[in-house]
Amino acid sequence: MKKVTINSVATYAGVSKKTVSRVLNNEPNVSPATREKVLKVFKELDYTPNPIARGLARNRSFIIGCLYDNPSKSYITRVQSGALEACHKHNYNLLIHPCELRGEALIENIEHLLTTSRLDGMVLTPPFSDSQELIAFLKRKKIHFARVASAIEDKDSISVRSNDEQGAFEITEHLIKLGHTSIAFIKGHPDHSATEQRFSGYQRALTVHNIEFDSELVAEGNFSYHSGADSAKEILDLQPTPSAVFASNDYMAAAVLKLATQRQLQVPKDISIAGFDNAPIARHIWPGLTTIAQPVEEMTRQAVEQLILQISDEQTSVYQATLEAKLITRESTAKHLVDD
Image 1 (cartoon, rainbow, N blue to C red):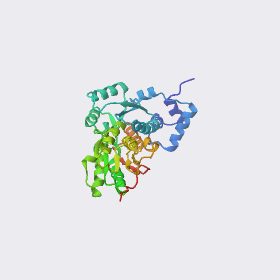
Image 2: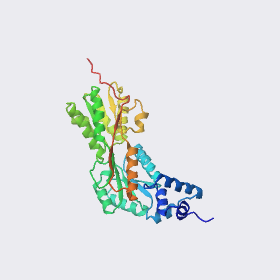
Image 3: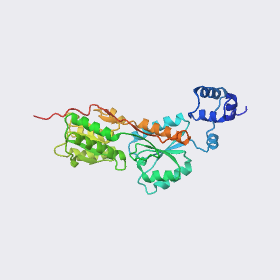
Image 4: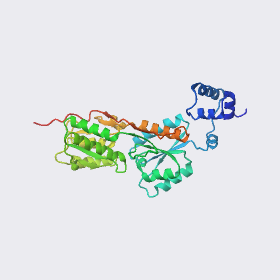
């Protein structure tokens, strides 16, 4: 039996090869009726696209690389979920590549990755999405890229983020409205722009509600559970003990909750605890964590989809969006009861 090719499909459907290619890659500028007709021919002819031939014909690999350096496995899982959704929609593959931002050979590492993998583009997650050095390198090499959760203002590159500063403000204000005035804060990884954004939101809420900022209530974390445990010890050793703790992510908040419980503190009766991200752990531990739901999957999905459109020359303007972060209240926070 003669092999069915894209030319065969075009002839049988009575459309151009370019139109078939657009349908195959789920690109726009194809009418619904034409798309349906071509898809019907795919099925009738039992056409299976050859990914290698497809890539050679269009000088593409149809592979998007996702660069990450994040201690939170759940965050990367959510990033991957959003990226895969966009890739599957457009018949792309996803390559997940772990890398260290502070490594001496970062650019060499990325250059080697681009050479060996023939990536069509890259999606940068924190902290890479804020690396001026990496961004400048990709621009010099004319590599398509999109940034997720970046605070850098760059009108020339795709960027999708959430409003971390506002989210941190809202969760701090939530604690204040519950009567808490001594609110400790655990910062995140120093290389992540979200760290300063969330710290800024915390400080702004204190200022708006006329609560004096106390640097002794601020501990340095790095988004990992272990750093949260170290910070929790530092905070819970304070005298008097703060009535509330806001950690920059849920894993650090979970560490605070564990140590507080070990010290016979009842959560939230004796101390309220809040996190950020709405990671699975926030729902699975008890009491459930009050947190900020950051739309990680949707941010990544939009970033990758826009990246693919840019690669396909279907997106002429640079896409940039800020998605809403949402406060989710659970059982770990409650009104602060002052003893008479």
